Image 1 (tube, rainbow, N blue to C red):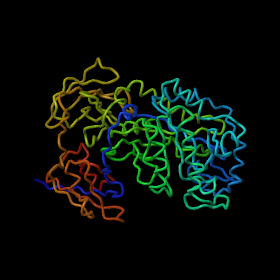
Image 2: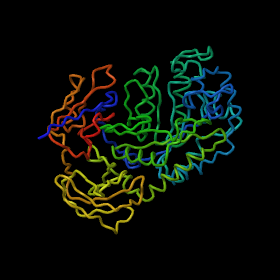
Image 3: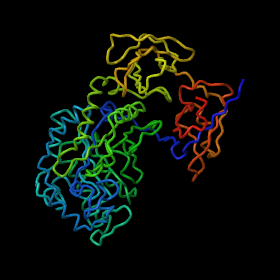
Length: 503
């Protein structure tokens, strides 16, 4: 037979498994694991400058403008007089989230600029003491969420604070007014405020920490002691000091295999910024967002999608449009998202998959040219149909180790058409064509060798030597291959394929 060697240029910094230790599957996580989709809201004083300082655009994300532009504390505090969100309508926000198919909302109670969006008793740098609005932002949103059956959570920056003396500052402080004791800041501002947001609004469902700069185990333990008083509270992994929390939080990307053994949530923006930035017009399409949601859920995670309201309390029109489009898709396909578990397949070239008991939901992004959807499973199938029209059954047949489904020439949804396959037993996934083949790498670590990619174990990994930014993988197939599924059996993000003529 003709010998074929495939050579991949792989970005080694991306091919890395996250073998996290498993956490106890607590009762409190049940609703969260079923929810799949939530809204992140980044809102605060930074929406006033909106990415512009001294009439010049400031690079980077909007909520970091004080740090990026090194705005003096006194100058930044003057923006508070312009923060008067007269068009803030929390009930409309909650309805928007609910119509989009979101099951929970997390809002910034205090970001890195130290401004509290609630009535804090330990500082005047809050919505009551520094803004003409003089109303608690959080309470009406909490009330609207409870009324609509939406879970509510608070983001809180526990370490970084660029206004209060002693607060941490990424890159170091730039104003004498910021100087002070970090421990004194934690004891007098941060810890009391965490107690406030956890006690003043009933029992919130989520507390979302961020940027644990300077957080030692001893410092973090003070916050953990507060959290333990709220047994149903879900926290993330950003407290610091070695406290893992309940969830992993990949930001602005979807990890190739999720986080085996851990609950995780990918947070992402609709454009390029979290806080409102007037000149950021780089909006993601509904296609991208729906497929991102599908990708995350197929890997066992939740999708936390951000909106950044302006200083008046209005969510940008494009964000509203995108949420409506996602909601329209979910209304038809909700069964394939909520309450599902991750895909049994390491990879599918045409899309993604989710599962619920004896149903597989095949999320078809790209319709095969021949109309034959190849699924590498060996189970007996009782029936297959489009989720949007269960009355029309799809023809299926066995083709070697693949199940073939005949799709209509025109899919009802060009973004993501969902096909339901009802099957018997546990998923019996056919091995990919690289199983048992020879694989070599130009660079590898002793405990993370190339062979791990073909061992079928999602908890092992291949990783290039430290400092190596790219590496070469070669797989000797020893035969001619008609390429369909991804060759690597577990966790690998492919870069450019060197020999494209093989496919």
